[in-house]
Length: 314
Figure 1 (tube, rainbow, N blue to C red):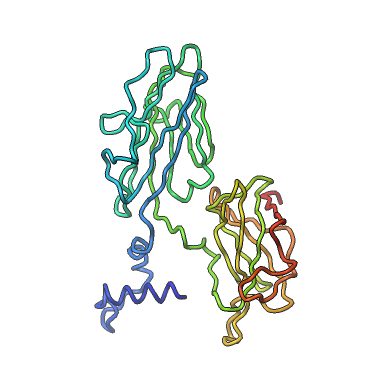
Figure 2 (cartoon, rainbow, N blue to C red):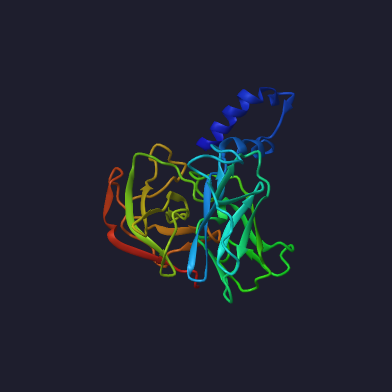
């Protein structure tokens, strides 16, 4: 509700004429424009480790609102000429130059496909492997790695897999095609919106998915017995573990007709939004431990030594 009020305020200042009695435009018609106003320009880096013949190194591509599409000192890095034939070599090819790192300008008005070529030179009688971390890239855009023949031989959705091995030395150029999306890094996923009030208790633990650490772009939410979201927050990665310190809010006694959150004695359930798949997993058990601690950790409810595993198995 607060976000909607903010949007209406902006609209009234920028488009005051549309709110006159004779010319009223539904706010939902303006949301596509306003989503650009409130979203963040593409600002991320994707690292691809390329290796072959017992040797390898990283290639970096990405977007930033603070750089150009050319060479930016301290951010971009040129690559030297290729090594001798029969030895491993890999480099980005962008604007007729070889790069180890090339970050281009990111802007909400430029959400179109960008293509980086990856030039490859195979070690004698060997293959080349490419590896990347795809845990948090799905919300950022589409990432396609394909051969220079339009994907006839290799066509990989990089959000679905995290590596590819090439054993055909004729595949000397791969194309990395990235189309950035509008990104709302601080906005919870749909259904995870909540109303914060002074009455709350914090739930602390580590979170895993199918026994593996969750990602920093995943969100955890608590829901009361009526299905109201009582709090949500993105996970925090520390020392390789995914932590949550989510405040779970109570019901506001000053609004008796609205159920904003928890009441004493009420159970809650935890749901996890997996950014890589867009799926929501619910923890297998409910929790009967909520209490108002004015924002402090709740005794006997989670804890530093606790870990909760979410499974996609039904």
